[in-house]
Length: 370
Image 1 (spheres, one colour):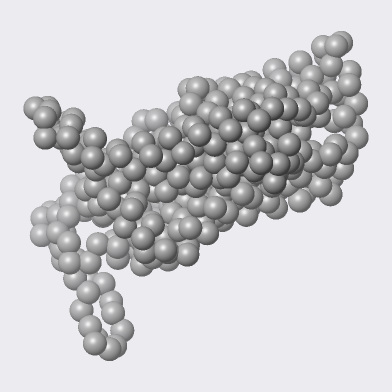
Image 2 (image 1 turned 180 degrees about the vertical axis):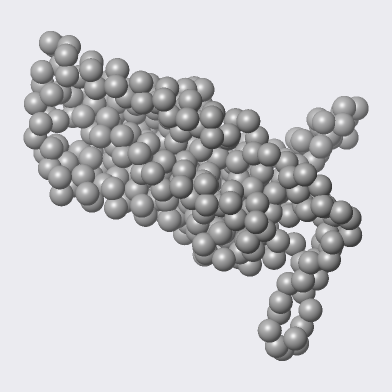
């Protein structure tokens, strides 16, 4: 079959009022989160500047090397690009790079401002795709698959870092167990993720509640989808998920150099970074306090000086919060306008489907050959 393929949309029902952006992502809520985040940052800066016992920390910050901070910022851009690449690979390659980038950056901004273990960004992305016309079941299973694939990249590198520390190939830890335990925990997490599909299927069969059955089916389908995508050896997904993590870890290393400190061993950086990210589960805007404390504590546990770790982590976290928000919040504003005007190409991801498009009614999509 040859020729150009063009999408046509046939409206089967009258337009209905568009579903508004969920309250947790409304401009007022985002402004409130930004104000809270700003207040927390001001308090942290005030503590560093005013507390007498932190003179060594102030001296380190005053000796910052702008060139290395610029390198760190570029590495964070690489991490954002990796996220967009993985998102596009998992959800739909028919979308333009512009649309994929706007959605990916919007999700990263939500994670930066709201930060509940990445759930905020995924929920926002699901609303955007639903508003753009993708079927709810497709979004549910691909969202689960995307979360699993990025999480598997995390625990996979955690296992690699732990094994590297235990064997001495990626640096040395204070004890053999500090390398072995993260590796074992990562392998157990991978096994649990792979078993989640069977557990979800069993729960769906036994539960009588519709909501639980729907959630279990979404998880089971998402696990199957993730495994299918892994078996396909899709380079974009694998490279994107890896780049999203590794550029971020490299950025943390660059922040050590930015203040004239030695960069910890690769294994230490990987393990500390991935354990520290568990702090993002604390429901605080930007994960401030949880991630920072987790990172600093883990680095110190693996032999990094407390002052060196604190300076690097605070600089790293500042860039990590600022860059996705600076890029993503304007992207979200532009995308919302495009969704309202239907000037987007998300619908091209559902050819031949009959779906409910929020704000447009029920539509059928076909791709004729011209």
